[in-house]
Length: 582
Image (cartoon, rainbow, N blue to C red):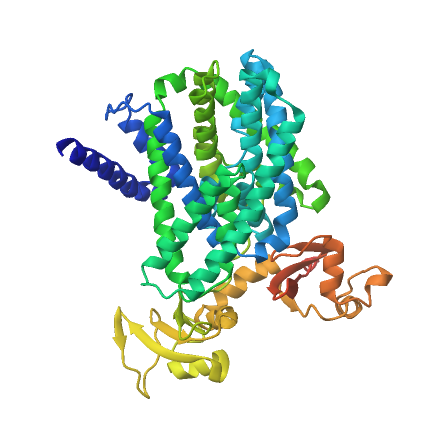
């Protein structure tokens, strides 16, 4: 029992330190995943902790389990609307992107390391795919609101590119160990089964899980366990049948997350904690596994590989893959830059070690160093690069918190919290007046919280800055309601600098807009609504922030409506000429 309790003490201490390190991560602007890795490395054999851990099987087991939970949580939070703008390009990056990156990097690695070409290409295949854990964590906690097309492309790619990376690694390991048994037909069938079975099982099982969650009457805490256990079943069963468990569990999460029921909100809250726990455990264990001394002995090779991967191989693969989809240069640059590496490459690097591939230690140490550099350089610059490359969009006014209150099997009320800002239209007014302006009879005020305490609302109650107001309102009105509580001056200034000084009705004819402001359009565009004209010129599904230059004027997509159509357009006029002085 002493040994068991000592193990519990050690695990609890490492996780406790990792969680506390998150405050340091936020202050230094470093990715939290990098801090988890750092805690593991400091506790390892080369660090002050001195813990000797070299069990690759246990590390693989923990890594696979953690990745399944992280992908399930990522799928639960992926909206189907994201597939409208990024499914095809992300699918290309998940296949061609991995192949192209690994091909270019493989040639470079073979030359740089002076090894057999199969070993060089194996190393390239190991680090060729982006990592879902790193991408989900860094994009969703970076504090910036990205262009929807860019964010959806990166997230869907990271959730779907594992089958191709696994295929390349397995194929190259087979070529190294059993070249006489390797065949193109066998590898092609492996790819079809990985992608096809993964997609099929994920969608079908996700639909079954979503139906069960809606129909079963369980204790509240059991719904999250139902989804978690179901996700692990999907992951394991798909892998046993030679499909991609990673793809299956991600798609199952997408289906469950988009078929909302009375248990969805609780499941999301629990899964968020489990996903963070999985990331912490996985990266701490991987940090324990690596020996910094061995890794530093290959530092210059890893640095050269990381530089070539980041600045040459991935940008070329991304540019070729996304060329048919009319991505702008700044979007291509950002997608290329945020090709984050994380736990997946390290987990893939363990395969050759476990299977006895010659020089597999070299592969593991170089791959780990590349991941470390990726998190340190690319991960730490996610917000900065978004602003510099102008793929960030202004955050729109939103509720502080959103809760669902289910009043039946298929009926729910949206409970929205708003905070009164100084200078907003809500300041100094009665809560019921604000509710009436927000949506008439469809909006009701249910609670007023002031300085952390629930307040009774009388006839003379007036809202002051800092008050929190809880409203029952339709979710589709949440953005409009938020504008009542937001300081209008700040919002208008921020929006005008990005979207333009005027708001244009997208259903207005382009000819009328040309007549009013002097814009020039093609003759066949004059009779088209502005939204159709913009969609035609963009040549791709529109998202908020898409810009179209018409002479010296700029039209910007300001809002998207349901059904993927443009809901509002901003117009930015050229600056007036400065009058000449006599």
